[in-house]
Image 1 (spheres, one colour):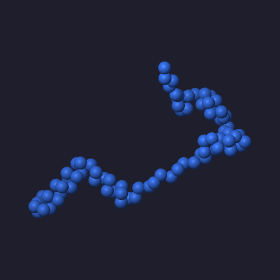
Image 2: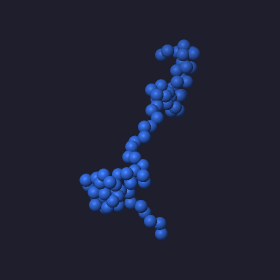
Image 3: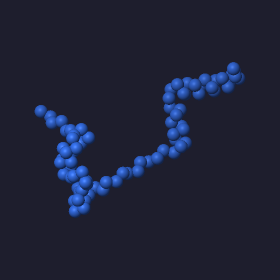
Image 4: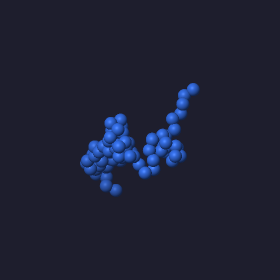
Length: 82
């Protein structure tokens, strides 16, 4: 039978702290270098930021928007401005 892994946020505080081998006060200073070697530094990586121009152009991906843009072009071509 396959074992279901319970995520830390689904556990009680005591269970999560025990599984992570820490206390509510945090890690001891002497444990930090060992954990950094095993898990790496606790830093967030910066994601690539989209340019404002790219965000603007993404708005026109929707089929209804494309249809409306085509309708605008046809109306301008026919000079029907009502």
